[in-house]
Image (cartoon, helix red, strand yellow):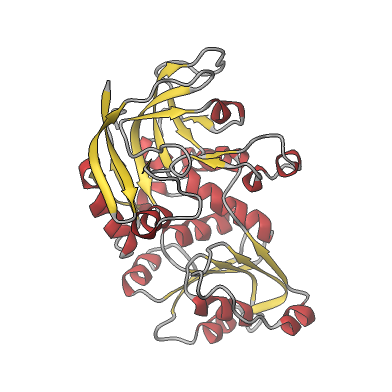
Length: 352
């Protein structure tokens, strides 16, 4: 049997084609994909490749659909279940898995990177996906499309847990794309008293000003550091979250930190610009903390789905484009050019 898929054979070579339909893995699941959202990493893989990408590959790691086959020995799932999947498949045995940080697994495998992902009609979930808690049941009231946001939201949860965002704090997020807006809403849920979004693109500034934050800074026409100081009564920010690849944002965030502030490198910088000088004395005298954040855990993914299901994060507002599988390349162009917010590919795996 065959299925439709978007297959990346080499950078800039994405084919809409017929490929063999995968078999249900032993102790795994077979999912009829209903929706798969695109992110900047998908666009990067399509345009230039990725260190973890093994080609040829069906991309897509933000997916949801319906179980159509259950492997031998699988408990807790049945045919017809609506599910969302966390893409990371940790080993469960290495020192990082045993320390409770499986997103840093030494043998991590990722759907859409090492295994075929969700830009196809069917998705084979390996046994590790079931064993490591990567599969979550979608509540009946939640659409497949909004459920695909659980993975990026889970990554934001990881970043804010690393940075320790808490009640009464001033939080600045650098970048007002879909990730930045998710960070803004999550910061409110964690008790932040003031949320600031800093952005350069005029269309995203306009979107951010539709109730996503207390203050939206137009970094192309304002001094971001001065704007941060003014909006925090001169104190600065307790948390700076880098949700973009603009190198200047790192400098703005560090300059805007308050005493005991935390700076989270959520987005990686371009490889040729990653080695920037850091004012270590400033970190020293502020007693500031610099943290990184990469990926998410299955626990964080389940929490993200719960937040979306209860309407605590306005997922529908992020879904600006819905396209069929035949238009994946157009969707990747939209993401690469930062047009709209979330682009979701609709497939025939559900009724939404």
